[in-house]
Length: 241
Image (cartoon, rainbow, N blue to C red; front, side, top):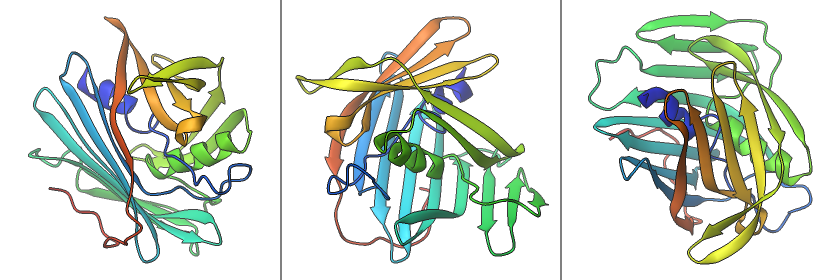
């Protein structure tokens, strides 16, 4: 059950905050860091979004019962538009069979996906193409901009796939003793269901995350820590540790 639980905090579920100075038409996210816990304390995920000289670096470090992975997306930011440059997924202490490295080249209309040491190049693509982390930032901006149904082309080890999201029924969420109106974002899969509740008044940070596990039913995780980030830039490279 490890991998589906990590998906809870990866492609589908963590949506970054948007800049507060442009709520009607947000174009790019602001730096922040957050921590999520759940599954009776066994799940711990730390998220960091920071500026680089050319754009953004978005990182995950997550662990569950001894299994740890690191994910990182490097993105360019031009005229308020995000464009993925590189994505990595690495199992810390693993054998490398599930590690992933994706390179994006919009000028050549190609995406190169290396998985388990084997590389495949996908040609003649219609950009934008997103990765598992950069798409989260795009979802956040689109939801904040009022869109209700969302569809994106996302690169992963299986190639280029369409990911569909939608806005569900509103709810209420709480964080550190305060109550917020929540927006529910859902994604249905053939065998799995996911949702998040994000708080618009908390810069669209996810506060409650849910995964419908096949055996045990709904598993949830919650926001434990959150703070806005520094305006200082960080290196434009991924740094798994």
